[in-house]
Amino acid sequence: MELKKAIELRTSIRTFTNEKVSVDDLKEIVRRAGLAPSVNNYQPWMFTAITKPETLSLMADKVAKKLKEVPSNNSIASKNVLSQVEWFATFFENAPAVIAIAMENYESVLEMGVNLSHDEINKMRNFPDMQSAGAAIQNILLTAVDLGYGACWLSAPMIAKTELEKIIGISEPYHLISFVAIGKPSKTIQPKPKKSIDEIFKLIE
Ligand SMILES: Cc1cc2nc3c(=O)[nH]c(=O)nc-3n(C[C@H](O)[C@H](O)[C@H](O)COP(=O)(O)O)c2cc1C
Image (cartoon, rainbow, N blue to C red; front, top):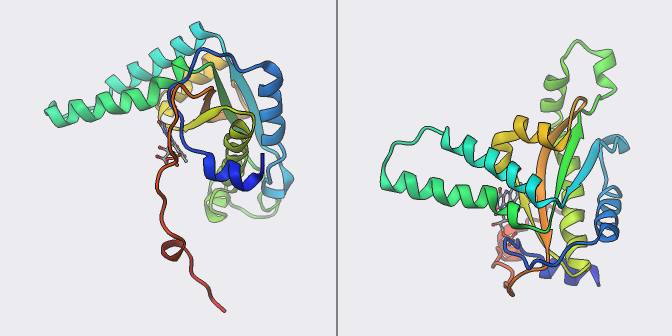
């Protein structure tokens, strides 16, 4: 598919048919994710595809349990918001596949030469590790469209990051960053309206 078309067709897909995502397609999606730019070509990522329904269900349970621990003011509005958030954080359990993106810390060369911690340098550089992960995730989303799937980026489940890392088997030096749910869309969804070019573009010449 032409890149422009994939970019224009991409929209977050949250409901899927039962059709599986083949292992070959998952590998191709991850291969293209790994072609993304990363700070100093560090390629700090590791991708785990989960297709086992029982595991996805267990993961969603952990997320739902964590969300229940979030202090609520018991108003109806709060209950509504929390139940909405719960759906946005757990719908991945019904996806044919979820790719978990994990990342290791980027050790800048600066770390060897200055008296600053990894976290301080990372903050000074505006989180190049997270920026690298974002580039890889966008490649996942666009490749999913290219291969005829729909996908959705999820950060909400990270509320249960520690529990999820245990289930998925992510350990030091890697940390869980995000999920992408993938499958064949169960319905046609129009891409969301976006800001116009005039609203988002400035030129300094
Ligand atoms: C960093 C990031 C985190 C997101 N986390 C979630 C999430 O946890 N659950 C969810 O349903 N959608 C999530 N989304 C999808 C956004 O809600 C979606 O991209 C946005 O509404 C724009 O819609 P579009 O993707 O269809 O253009 C996330 C998107 C980004 C970029």
